Image (tube, rainbow, N blue to C red; front, top):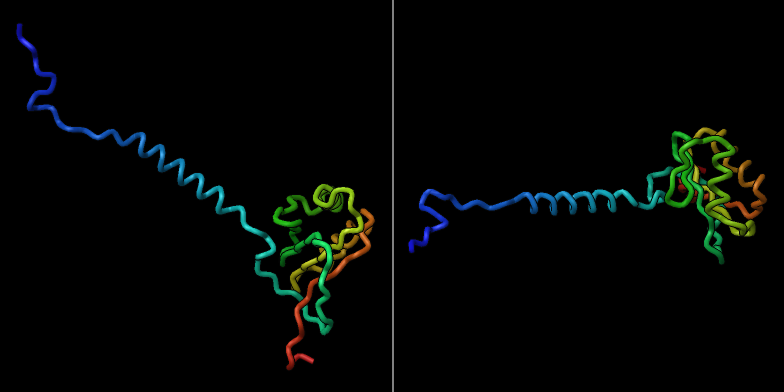
Length: 143
């Protein structure tokens, strides 16, 4: 009885890397997807200047950000369509039924005035009365 050798001298050693590539692609997708969930209020917005002092809010304020191009962000989410109806729907969804919640409007100093008016109009139509507009202190030489 002859037992044949399964591996001959001509067989080459081979490493199957397909499963390793699958794992690496999965990790890459995980890191790409989680890295995009950043807080939008950390965007660079040049706030207008004012001389008033900051008032500490007792309740967590709803934050609406308007960037230089007039795009709206509520919390960390961008409002895709900048129309009044879409903005009202997004604010109502974020705030729920709490209309006594304070609202902080952070608009870039170079934002078109119409975008700020649209945000204020949406808040007014929804019944929000506690609106604060975020500013930075004036510099000593700009008086």
